[in-house]
Length: 165
Figure (cartoon, rainbow, N blue to C red):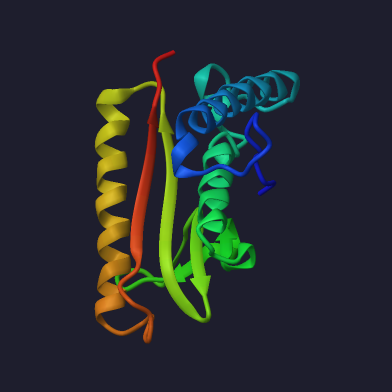
């Protein structure tokens, strides 16, 4: 993820989160819009709002912001892994590809998922809740069974952007 720089020229910090979050939300909408255009121009049959999210990447602004905040707090940038590099073993399933994992000095410190929901709240909100609970339970059970030894208990985060369209 490219480092995000605030308007004063410094790195993101907990002291200037509102403008950084605003930029991540703007990135979300711009990426969704671009993906919808790409889907309409392709031979893919996906249409409507689903076409906006099929390309993935709309939550990358948040992933970059979290990475930059971690680095600002002293975590080496190379310790912050994304996507397939953030694949971790589980307990109930063999492995899961997290959106972000922080592995420093061979110790798992954190795992984070980024999700968004902009429609079908009745159907998808329940699915998202089950996913968050299941992923968290799976990772923490693996930790309890010593899969990540000698790591301390990792932080597990689930950032959810709820949007109305």
